[in-house]
Length: 56
Image (cartoon, rainbow, N blue to C red; front, side, top):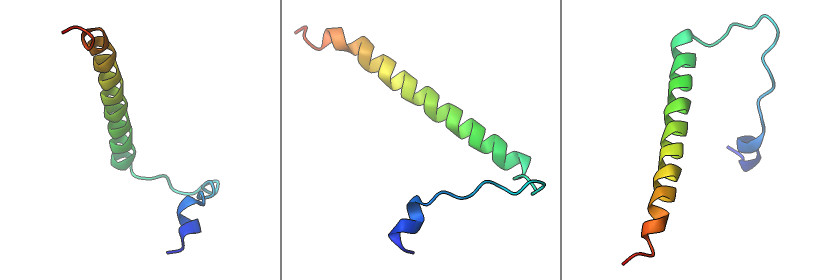
């Protein structure tokens, strides 16, 4: 596969085209929400630990 094909976006779906199955859309939603919650938790944990890094 050529390298340029990786970064080329897909065109939007045609009007009236069938949607992806509900289970697949819900899995994407759940995965994205879990990943964003994990990212927020990691940043919050790092910020909370920041004042203790200088103590010692």
